Structure formats: C-alpha cells, structure tokens
Length: 241
Length: 259
Image 1 (cartoon, rainbow over the protein chains, first blue to last red):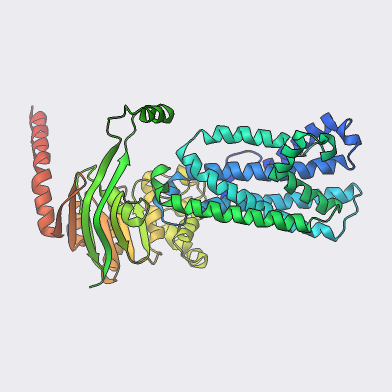
Image 2 (cartoon, rainbow over the protein chains, first blue to last red):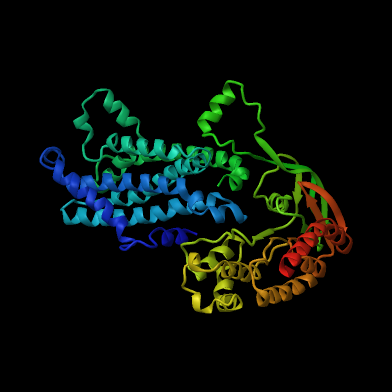
C-alpha cells in the first residue's frame, strides 16, 4: 500500500519523483538569497539551518494535505472495498516519511560538506522522524474525515499551513523574536519544537532527549485520540466519499 | 445449518441533497423553517436470514435497494436502524465502480486488490500470468487502469477475486459488463464455487443466470422485501409483474417496425 502511494503520486508528471526534491531546494534558494545578508549573519551555517527547517515543514504540510485528499482521490477503492480505511491514511503519511528520512540524509551530507562537526546526537534524528510521523499521522486522520464532511476544510487548512510557515523558526531563530507575545505563540507551535529537535540533533546542540520524550508522548496520546475518533466515523465513510 | 448473514429490522436512509449549500441548509435548519424531507429510505425494515453455503440471487428493478443491501452486509454502509450480523470474511465485487486505482498499472492493481483482501503477495506473484491471461489482458500488464475499457476492468477484478478465500461473496452486477465468452468463463468459476461451502449473494438482472446458479432468490422493490424463497417461484413472480411492462414495450416496437 505504501508502495502504491509512492508510485501513484508522481504518475503523469514529467520529472516524477524529482519534484519532491526540487520543491524544497527552490524554496531554499529563494529564502537563502533573500535572507542570508540579514538573518544569515547571525546564524551559523545558515544554508543548512534553513534546509532543516524547510524539510521539517515540507514533510508536515505535504503529508497532511495528501492524507486529507486520500479518500477523495481513491474514492472507488474507499467506497467499494472492505478493509480498515485508516490504512490509506497511514500509507500516505509513511510514504512521505520515507522521503523525509531521505531528505535528512541529504541534509546531513550537506552539513558535513559545510564543515559541521557531527556527534552521536545525529542518530537522534531517527527518533525525531518517528515522533514527527506520529504527530503528522494524528493530524492526518482527523483531516481525512473532516474533509469528507466539509470541503471548506481544504481552504482553512491551507491558510493555517501558511500561517504555520511564518510561525515556525524556519528562516529566523528564536533570538530574533525577542521576548514578546510572538515568541510565546511560536513556542506553542508544535512544528517549532520538531524543527529545533532536528537542528539540535544535526548541530549537536543542547540535549533533546527530555523534550523529545515529552513531545513523543503527547503525540502518541493525540494519535490514539484521533484514531479512536476516526474509528467512530469509519462506518459512514463509504457513503461520504 | 449455521446462519452466516442475519438482518433484523434493518433500515437505511440516505440524505437527500436539497440543492442548497451546506451553510444555507444549516442556517435554515437553525431558524426552524425546514419542513421538507431530508432523508429518503432506501431500505425499510428488512428481515433476512441466510445460512452457510447458500447461493442466493437478488432481483429487483433499478433503485429497488439491491446495492444498498449488499453494501450494508459488506459493512460499507452503516444501517440507520436495525441489526446486521455477518459471520466470516466478506468479499464485495461491484460491476460498476470496482475498487481499483486509475493511476496504477494492471499488475499493480492486482497486487493491491489482493493485498486488501488478505491474499499473500507471493501467491499473486506466482499466479500473475494466469490472472492476467484469464482476464485476456496479457498485452496490457503495464497499462494504467484508467486506460482499460469497462469490460477489461471488470475482467481483471473478477480474475483477481478467484484467488480470494472469503466465506461470503457479494456480487453486484459483477458480470453485466463482460461479453459472452467472459460470461461463460465466469459461469465455469461459479460452478466450481457451487461445490464449495461458500455463501454467495448475487444481485443481477440476468434471470437465466440467477435461475441456473442460485438456490434461493430475494426479490426487493422500493426498499421492501417482496419475496424470499425458491428461485423458480420468485423469478416467475418477478417476471410476471415486471415482465408485463417489457412485453408491452416489445409489442409497441414491433408495430413501429412493421409500419
């Protein structure tokens, strides 16, 4: 099923799977060119810093948006075959997570090339990927069935994602925000923490074990709750797609 | 005999689109001026018991509720009221709207379809050639599903289904899209099934097929059970009622041709 998701996605586009690499790279170039004189001076290895933020954000937004549409895109399958429907959502998110893992490998490669000293903490990136997958899956399960009830969710969520892009320290750092209300808002954004975990792992920053464990636990609780909600809704799924 | 499917007072209602956007509907509902009917009953207080190994036909005019009934048993729809008991693994195969994915190739779809119904990948891999050739699609293994004709689609789906090991088969007009030679092949498969203890419920407009293959037949009309009994009797009654109209139509046609 995961393979199916992976293959389906880029059918019919000229560059196929390359797009998933090109998109963040183009974004990286734009942000780098715009910000490296300004913010770039204060942040070490600005290109790698940017890339990690972009990769994290891209995985979250792509996986949740894809999962939101999955029952609509595979409506014949969802309406006419008998199987636990959450599999479609899980497969969608996992196929994006594989891409996410590959992106981090590239990140680490570039980091080494840029002269970043790696330590053992780099292996924590695996835990970061798992935690983010659990979190994205929890959000995806809810979105996937909300979308069947109310198509407006699509527009609301796109707006929310755009907001999240600016409320996540992707091209700036926390120092830049000062101590005001905006900092508090940014700190309440789960993606902020996920981005910082990934950066700490690669740049060998402060220990993230504690934070990662707490976040992982919260993500797990959220996942169980959204799974139960999804299961409650599932009997009505076939007639809604 | 062991009961494998039992329906007790099952009803199913569907929301009727009022042609308004949800927001307007919501508002008018909130202000209490929504006297119109929002639901239409597709099945009404249905009681039914099917025992293991029975092959049951399901007849009725378009819109009688045949597909709704099958999808309820399949668990794809939830009943509005009543209780449904189903024992064993169920396979549902619809002639229209097969659960396959447009953007994937014939081979990939066979794997996916089989995986959904719990067939080992190895088994399909070993038999892929047979599945494809039985469906007459040997040249099209790498063709994307959406480029196949409707007949090819149903042939592929049915061919893959033969490898499923389900206890209950629900077929919804599964054979209507195929041509004569395909129908012959299917009938052979069904005859093989006949020897096994598989329970089957087959919705069809092909009375000859139902007569040949089904021991018992359900006749529903307008969401209500009209008859459930020996195939011969039920079909005869069904044809007597609905066939009347057909005969009249044919006669009119003849007249036109003679003129």
